[in-house]
Length: 164
Image (cartoon, rainbow, N blue to C red; front, side, top):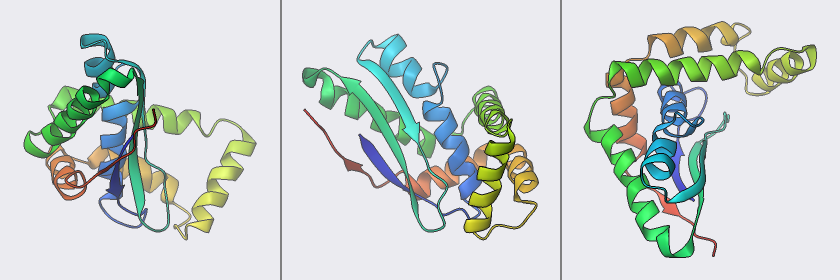
């Protein structure tokens, strides 16, 4: 696991970090899945998690691999996060990440129970009643430059945990 600090939900950087999370590890079309599994064949699985929190949060990258490949996998993960800091995300990758993020967001609100849960969570986080609409609007308006600035701010320091 490689963990990075992430902004709290009330921070303007929150939305860009959600897109970074989707880009890096949201499904089989994600950057890390494509590089680590499809191109290099180094991991069994890879995923990312960036929870919505009132206080500081984290971006966690988790993967399963052979013990002999751990260092190589860690270096490739860091290479991909470095790329986000150094190079603007191209428009196709940005739009794919936004689309996946908003699609998953919509799917998480299909039932009354899911809506009650998310609205209760937003209330607990002291978010405004229209945060649901603000979230979609902010994701749609986030630029590649904002993604890069947030990557530069948050993806420079990390912690690694290897369980063997």
